Image (cartoon, rainbow, N blue to C red; front, top):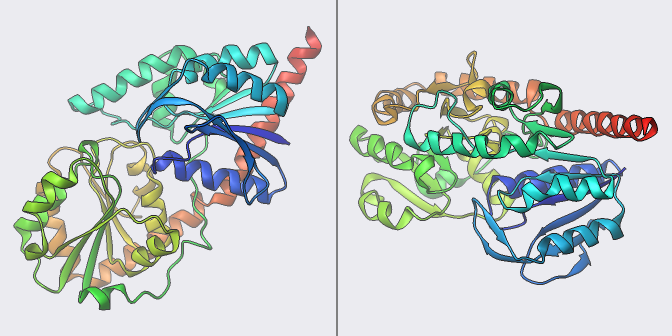
Length: 381
């Protein structure tokens, strides 16, 4: 099967990781993949995986959204005509091209699948989540014209159904993680940091990630010199937060870590992983930490609460995160047996529900269903 994948290669975010992991896994299963993404020059080349790449020109690109040039849609259409894929899979990049894709693919008679990433707070409890809800409202009429839309949880599906997307056109395929690569193992990072207990946040330093709530709770809890909080990631809020939460509070700012092996090493060293987000989709970072056998604390934003429900971790309400963490941080510091048990349960939950292999098998099945449906419709005509 030949899949034309429309996604992101930069800047680094969950969508970039999602596209890399899925397309590499599809290639390993002997599918053909062509990767179309936003880049400065109109180029076409082969990468190390023999995966043709097509660059689509853009005016502006961020971790959240992209503004393509006026000719990007023409380049996209011409590229699809030349590539002749069996289907198109768009890992939606929040760009105007997302809305043009159904029309382009219909003209080329190509089946169109979307993965819809925007984070959300299922209870719509704050202004930020209301803003995200508007994204769902904006996209729903267009997703109705995609052959299939992939979401990560039942909550997302129900939300889109309420907004008018046919239930039969929505597939639930959670993010998956390579459990062989992300696994418990040795790391000497705690020794390097002179920490007996290592707490880790990994992600963007942005408003919706609610990192300051964690920092406030840590500072208030006076965790002692044997416990360190490692902040892995970068973002626009880092410059305003770092001066007030630093080494004097045993908080270490690692910045963005590009090397995957280094990120795995960090997770293997961690005792506790904390994700205090106000809104989420389904955090790949959370799944990676769980796969490494780390005890996890996360809010019930997006589908993260579903991931940890039933004892696989501790689930926080998105309201009052600082207050909840003030209680939990000392508890996790002083109860190593609880940390160990939750780490084991987290790893087991990933093996049961969130492996990349399971993800790809379900995706292959969805592709087959979409292709068969398209074939039947074509024959009827």
